[in-house]
Length: 471
Image (cartoon, rainbow, N blue to C red; front, side, top):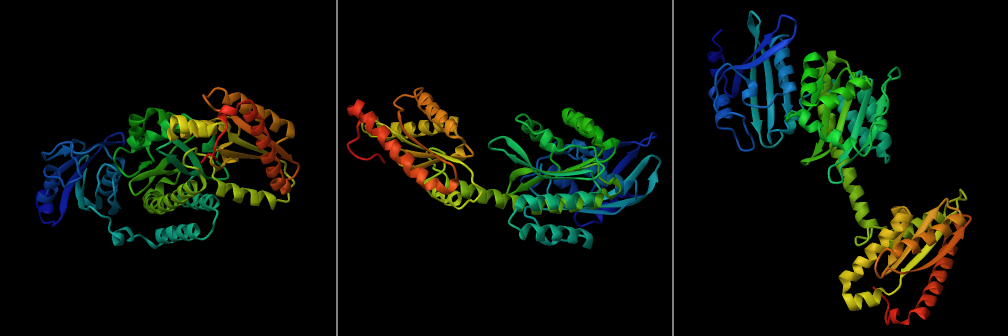
């Protein structure tokens, strides 16, 4: 067949790919046999945002001469050239800042151990919503159900577990997981996961520790510029092993025989990953297309949820010290006063002695540093979510399910640790309540005791007394 004539009659970028079948049943080389002018231009004069490994097209060269190895590209070429399937995909590979509309069409006849397919591509800077939506009714139904579930309830985590189980069932997999990553803090966590009844796989929570972020961070290199990883046979696993041997060993030891993994990205930000382990390889194409679109929906929802969480942090935390602010304290006190489960509560009022003198003599920057040090001391003794900056130089700690003796010990720890910082002296007052319903009474008593402690301090150190209230 005159392959060059075939591609020259196609109006968009097109080439012919040969796939080599090995005698042992394996797969050999993938070569670009020839391409039309639009295709060779995409290599020799690539559009902005596209970087080629080589910018000179040579017929019958391996495709890896021009771009990094791509498991999904190889699988699509194999299915079209060897299995004689017609495939279509609309993707945004990580290595290119463009969207690709791809078609893979089988060509006949084969020539010995060489099989051929026609590869056609169009690309654009912005995604085309209509092309993203041209999916089968089954896939559309699955994704629509996910959207409905995500929009209905208030409990996102519970809903994510339901979505996880739906995806696991669709994939026929033993395990499905939605995994979050915070690239700024370099932390990761399991948002949701689901298991089949007969699996021996264990929860990802058993693997996630302070060091696991580095493992998860290596996945983007394993994807190597594509938009996902699908490892369903020896050929695919050989590529995973070559790129990421540590992760390959980890999956194998855990009992993983196949995996499909998609990054969760939105507005250029990596939010995490979704994956299914030991899935139905016969339905790999449908699984890939479904998870690909579902990942887009999930990433959008997680991004919104994270944005709301960040807004809540901004509205509930004191920006100078990082502890909770007075508005959050008032809301928390109201909720504790309304509780009926008879939990104990301990209250600590602390105020900085001598902050006005520090501000007057050393400036507000020194005063701000003193306030931040005060918050650090409190955070070494209590949880950050129990600490509130009530205003100025005054902090309040509210700790539930605590004994009166433990409260006294922690108050002394505050005084002891504060001595490690220059000019940091607390006036401290504590109160204990047998029931959170009495929290307001405990707050009043602790406040009175704090001012009594402050009065005694200034009697001993009159030079530290403030002429006006600290701000």
